[in-house]
Length: 343
View (tube, rainbow, N blue to C red):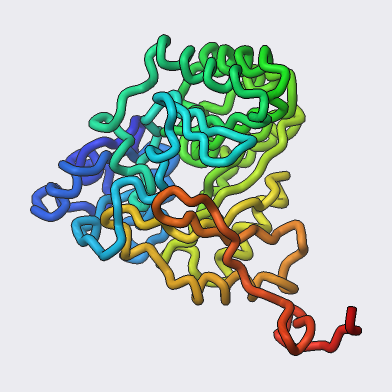
């Protein structure tokens, strides 16, 4: 059983993962994209299952060498909207702040896979971080800072507290939101010290937790979520719709119910982005819409995520879920149309 993060093909094989370090295709994948599988994730992998949804998310695959039309290194257009290093200002009232470009694990479908990892972009220097925060401070129209990366929960509580303090000093910033995979991938990092750092922000603190399969909500993950929720931190979910991982209604329903049971509000269900070598993960939009429609009525309204697509090139997210209103009237969750009085 792994006791430290697995970072090479040899590490994965030694830990019993279904990986052949001599496979030329996997060697090529490992040379291009970062590998990191934490002990918490390694414990979830079923090496006897060739279709294991956990292994599919984290273990390198030969299919990552296949390029498809439309794929691009920066599929959601972060760089187009980056006025200074570490800032993405796509929408008027909020910015992304990317202080680091490393993660505790590297997902095989990552839309920033060309930017993250040991060979990716460096962390912001102190000077660059000050400049990024100054950009926000000088723009009173910005109400929310979304700290992402990479995974900002790899930062020490001291550095997280410093970001919260800088945001607290900006009277126009009302919300500080952190995006992370840590609660499921490295739950031991969710400590009282980290939670105190999150709570140190003057305004409202949100944490968006990324999980794609109900098996990722382990006892350890649930304990970390409870620690944050008990401290008054608002928890949201982010999930990527992935072929072979969660593209069936039973799995999605179990995941959304698991979020709600742990005080995590389902937020976004992302259509998989056009990152290089990720085509084997993408469903069709029609398949995604059908899945989301199947959740309606089957699950409480608390369990309904918004199905979104990031328009390639930097044009932002658009909801692409099913419609319930047309020329025949309004449709119920079973698909039947009902007349509605003229307005």
